Length: 498
Image (cartoon, rainbow, N blue to C red; front, side, top):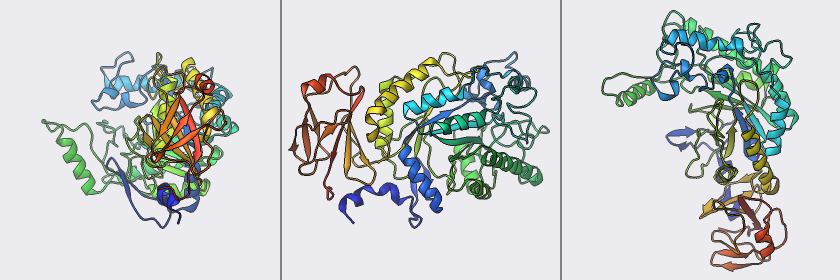
């Protein structure tokens, strides 16, 4: 095998059915998938690089964190800040769940969102069909806690089945459709049995002591997911949240008790592991019969049903040797915040470049408001990102990571299955012009290769310098670069580069 391919193929090794290695990120192991259709789909997904995540539900009316305020755990994100009586948990939950009745996003226009996402260069969508509170943004026949229920103000709207409308609109713009679905359901009597008070995020009874009751919840969960896999067109990704709902061994539960118990002197445990076998292997098999090649992301649950890992609201320090995606808040929080402050275009573009150079995808979260609209700032940010990607998308899409990934303020990607390198120069804050010279230390073009700037295309003068090259940037190009925030030098390296 050629030395270049030997150096570059680490991403594909984990996708090979014959590769039995296990990789680890922050204590979490990655297990390769053995379904060839899924591996083909994962390879395609790694070409897409940039997606949209949307957290939306009845809670948007209060501008609060999604679901977590009804969780009886004492954490900052669980604080109750709205309602008439937030000091009384049961009164608060009753009022929170009553938000279903007043939810009426009359300005809901998914086609506008889909167009903005497509123009921004996004290639796939992950939408919250149901969060932990159990409120369904789709027309499930297994619950009345849903946007299409007769008690919901929006149910008479022609677009009341919000998930269907969103998936159709985004697919029409060429994006993949991904269904976020919460495994825990804090509204379901099969999960939080009304006989027992809930005491943390977990099921509020012992599934081993009440196996029939737990089986009803397993069936309920499977049935709702199969609705999504059956009635909502082509689904590319099933993105499951609530990683604590999983099969746990005695050793894992004991470790959880020890680890969490060591964090308190009183012995009070806010949360801990409970064996909650949702029969995931069986569920995935049934889902893939409906949607062959379906990518499944059973978040934070080690095993073959976590087809890619999802660092949350952070970017790994180093490149990761398996499929991964950083889910990042664009502005405010995961859910709608009235006065949300959005990232600057420079920060967002640099983050995208950093993630892609390390072999990952960026899933960017934008939260709709209670009227069914985005903040104007969200559109402005996506427009700026789209303008940059329009010029420099070749350095983003269908690329793979290549060591050393980054040197100083230059990130590297390579075009998939080729020797073409993209050296992405990240501009300093306020920097509007290219420097007169750019030194690339890590790569040297092959003999006679053309070096050009994406968006310009003309050959640039370069010379060897050590193991790298020194590129001259003409004054006219320096003062009038084809894009802002970051600039891309593109060139080919020799096949035996090492």
